[in-house]
Length: 146
Image 1 (cartoon, one colour):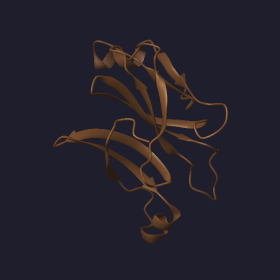
Image 2 (tube, helix red, strand yellow):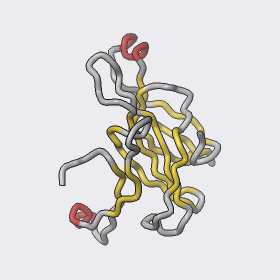
Image 3 (cartoon, rainbow, N blue to C red):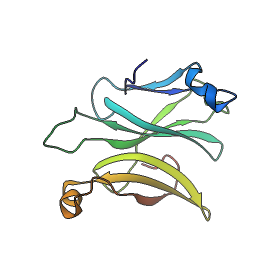
Image 4 (tube, rainbow, N blue to C red):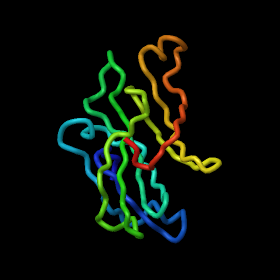
């Protein structure tokens, strides 16, 4: 099935090579309208402090030649032991301090501090150096920090 960019699915397999053929479980579907309604992108699954988190990007409007995409970073949480349970909860947009096009969030603990890394850009940044993306990091006080 071609990519739909409208849902987040999980798969599991005993071997990496079998993952592509593994059965999918849809754990979240985009909203009909609003900030999480277009182009669901780059979900990442993390197990943090006994809970499961999925960081992903979503847009509010279709792409436009004269504007940056409207993607922002969001997070889902599941406190069950098994991430395939149906108990995923929307925790909302991650407040990165940048209200800008943002993609590809990931998280890691370094020396006891939880960090979020992502690639943002704004028209000002793009005009200054011509590069579409940079990598920024910020510390998170909670994995679902808003």
